[in-house]
Image 1 (spheres, rainbow, N blue to C red):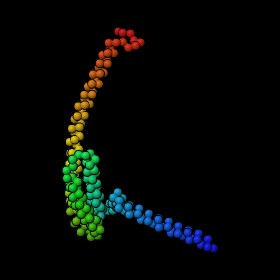
Image 2: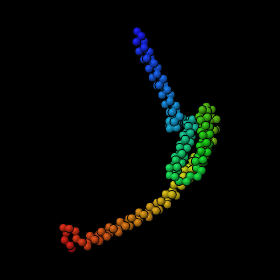
Image 3: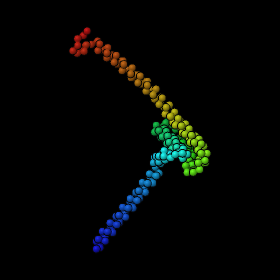
Image 4: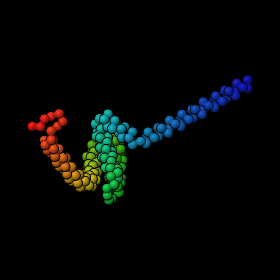
Length: 192
């Protein structure tokens, strides 16, 4: 009987340990998924699609704000990868993100508003703030683009000159080859 009790005790311990491991794993995965920006943005987009009325407008503004910030981040990441001078763009973008976070908090508060009149009064001002953030990010993207285009224009000018030179050399070579072939008969052909 004691062997059976030991086996059952060991089995119970294994089951308890497995349950603890599964619960901890599920909790870790859940927290990572919950904190994920991609998942959060996707859920926000789904909520904005499924919601109607003024709440839809609030969620649409939040999606617009989120997309705008992602666009600005991508532009700065691209500027970092190319190694072009960036000046204070990162610091400015962080300030923009700070203001956008405050606007997003206001929009989150508005999304919980149940008074239709208060919501209707607050939406135009929120829309203006989101547009201001979008305009700032557009200007930031334009600055990054200008830095990339200026360097690209110089490189393309040099590349165009090199290609033109190579095409001219190939044309001269083909003309010379035709001239040589016209002067000497091909094997198996008689000269004119």
